[in-house]
Amino acid sequence: MSDLRELYQEVILDHNRKPRNFHALDGANRKAEGYNPLCGDHITVYAKVEDGVIRETAFEGSGCAISKASASMMTTSVAGKTEAEAERLFELFHRMVTRDGGKAEPPADLGKLAVFSGVCEFPARVKCASLAWHTLRAAMKGSAAPVSTE
Amino acid sequence: MRKMEEVRGVSIGRTAPFDVKRVREDFPILGTTVHGKPLVYLDNAATSQKPRAVLDAIRRFYEEECANTHRGVHTLSMRATEDYEGARARVARFIGAAEAREVIFVRGATEAINLVANAFGRGRVKAGDEVLITTMEHHSNIVPWQMLCESTGARLRVAPINDAGELDLDAFETCLNDRTRLVSIVHVSNSLGTINPVREVIALAHARGVPVLLDGAQAVQHLPVDVRALDCDFYVFSGHKIYGPTGIGVLYGKAALLEAMPPWQGGGDMIAWVTFEKTTYNVLPHKFEAGTPHIAGGIGLGAAIDYLGALGLESVSAHENDLLRYATEAVADVPGLRIIGTAREKASVLSFVLGDIHPHDIGTVLDQEGIAIRTGHHCTQPLMQRFGVPATARASFAFYNTREEVDALVAGLRKAREVLA
Image 1: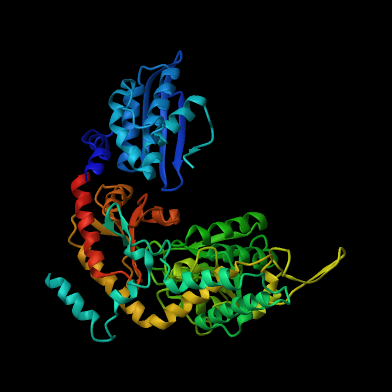
Image 2: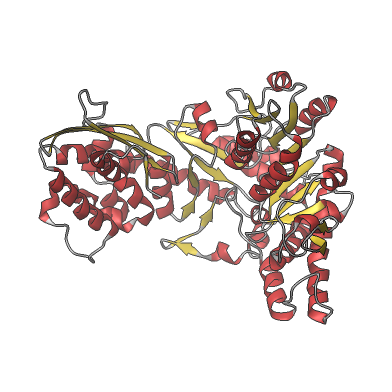
């Protein structure tokens, strides 16, 4: 039960119930689709980028609590960041959920995203947590082909 | 509780009580724990667990008679050949085939369908022709036909189902026409549990001279299957879903059809005589078994069929039907739970959604309780689209499951609601 509460923290459940920026984005100049072929999760991420700064992001799609909350919190975390800063955030996030770097506390730079630290105890759910981030990265690179977590 | 008693009342009477406790002892894995809890394995439609008899048969092959088949004059090779061919004969008897040479060993149901799509399809299916499937097919009975259609210019048609997940036979009939070259349909749906009216399907297709392939991957372990009584033209299944090893499966085909088909893969064993100018092919079944086969797998499958035969498919299916009824009643009390697939004729599969909770989250909560179910699209994405859900949670039962395990599932679902609400 304690492991489950670590995974499904209240903040995550809240973002699952009321996902932020959960819509298409008018005036978006970046867009990508992501799939998780294992489970059929599907997400579209939109971004408005000006002078290398992410002004706004949003997403649409369907997925589990982890993937939806992760997408929701990603959109609130990267707003106002430069593309390089967003990329750095993704690296820190990915390292945390895959526990690449041992049992260290999540770095302070991750801010609220640290609530996903419990994911590393559930290897089957790492892809759920990282789908939105992979998709955002593809959007930044202007990839035409949908990204896949496989 | 009263409801449970009524269910129990229905189940007893017609068949002798099934000694599930004793049967469970035959499966070493069922005594293990997951996250410190006794394993409750309810993912049998994905793969079944293996009884000791199967594990022993595989081990005996490798320890006592490991050799290649159909080649050597030495003793081990002859023994290996005898046991492998003995397994083929058992499979033939098990499904009621007229002759053992109508049983082709393949990797699994998927490979069997690909074999038919290639060896039967490429010669007979031309531009403008049609292959008819249904909405409830597994990807393995969709994609090989799409690939065939792409390469030939043929068209894939899909017969619809109703909201209960039953094939619409009238609509199916209207999909048949003089361009239909093959009907390929699932016998028991892996996602819904629906048992299709395959006799009617075959009668309708045969009335127009159209051959029928039945995908029996979810059927042979639950229902007695007699390919001659059904009069199907092809029947496919996987060994690992019927308590045998992975990597072995069966294509049954009527001898006349198999004889008329060109080989699919070329190589050793499938030839009679090879020169650089021309090769003549071996006779059935070897024509379709290029290369060294999965000998241990075939022998393991033979042992699985013997094991199942000794239990008796009738008592096995009576126990499984009882579990399905019991589970269907029990989950009805879980708030927000909706069963996907409510066909009148069902086998062993309980697919459902639980309010707004995504099936993956249910799967994770249950896993912490030691309960294994499948969550996702079950390789039937078009079917999920038909029901307007991205995924379902699926509990699927085998004869070694118990009512106590169903109770554990229901308790786990209540917990999932608590954790995720």
